Length: 118
Image (cartoon, rainbow, N blue to C red):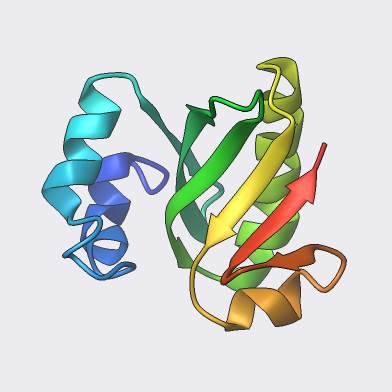
């Protein structure tokens, strides 16, 4: 199994969320249907999806992340931001643990969700 494959990260991504919202089977289904993207850099992995809102916003949202914070922030995030911009996204969105607020202090606090305009 390749270290950057979804299979290698699936177990850790399964524990990233409250399963009442995003269980691993739901993430599997989103990936298989092409509605979600898998990103990995060796020390971290992330699942994203693009959501279009009726008001015109188009966001790239993080569904689950696992691994080393430096890998997520320094390795994966720049790739995701560039890709999201190329997809016409207007925002990046993270709904997650409070620790994300400390890591992304340049993002504005939006309810309990972190939001960054592109």
